[in-house]
Image 1 (cartoon, rainbow, N blue to C red):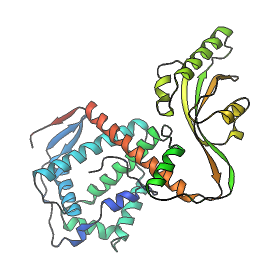
Image 2 (spheres, helix red, strand yellow; image 1 turned 135 degrees about the horizontal axis):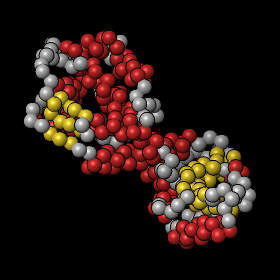
Image 3 (cartoon, one colour; image 1 turned 30 degrees about the vertical axis):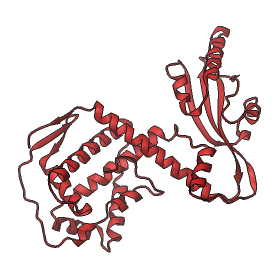
Image 4 (cartoon, rainbow, N blue to C red; image 1 turned 90 degrees about the horizontal axis):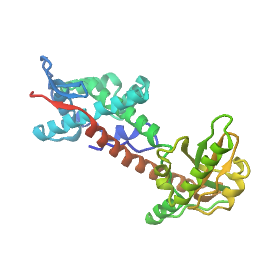
Amino acid sequence: MTRGMTSGPGRGAGLIAALALAILLVGGPHPATAQELSIVVLVNDDPISDYDIEQRERFLAITTKAEPGPELKKQATDMLIDERLQIQEGKKLGATPDDADVRKILDDMASKNNLDAEGLTTALAKAGVNVKTLKDRIRAQLVWQDVVRRKFRRDILIGDAEVDEALSDAGEEAPSGEPAGTALQLRQVKFTLPSGADQRTIASRLAAAETVRSRFNSCANLGDLTKGIQGASVQNLADQQAASLVQPARLLVQHAKVGQMTPPTLTGSAVELYAVCGKRAINADNPKREETQRKLMNEEMGIRAERLLRDLRQDAFIEYRKS
């Protein structure tokens, strides 16, 4: 099972491909028998029943063509635990699934198999799977995609060198177009000043900013340099044009080289520095480069999603009960 965020241009598009409906090839009904529910696993007090596991195991059996057994049951249980953790993390961030998105993905899956939603529900039922099992899977992945975007979108910066390397590895070159300007990949470090700050406070913030600048050696670990410093924050300003910055920051950024940080400047409410993480010429038409950058961004977000889920598992209270 891939636990990271599904990559791809459309929301949930990867999920449709991943859950190919081999069910339509299954012949004969496999009715689910009514039974008294028994709690098998508690995930931070969120229960998973034996019925939940049985349903997910059947679903995996028909979509992956794997043989039912202890290994598939464990895979089903682990998948449900992950999804409980993903939904719980979503609730903390206010990321709730949109029923309209769930229905849209369900309709897309049905149409790809020449069915409507009702026909898909019937096909699943013939294999003994309640359509709620599929809806729960879709809902969890939508929530997880939202969680990952909220947590990491502003922290991930794909530089020009990484895009160039990826294009070179693929044996491709981005089409050249007429230069339309220069895009700057910046990270702004800001030390906020309280209203009516005196000279001593301002001097303290300037000193803290100079310390960060002296220790700066990579955009990747910039967040670590400001961690724990009162009033300090880091913001990703990818694809920023110099003209959008006010002086003297504009001039300082234009003259800084990639991998350098500008000297601190004093604004009305903060001390600011800019780390120059990349510069590139903006061409009128460069879709291959943009596509590669999006792909690298999705891959990095997938890696971070894996780490986040692993951390959530380590911190969770998971109680296994005898089934």
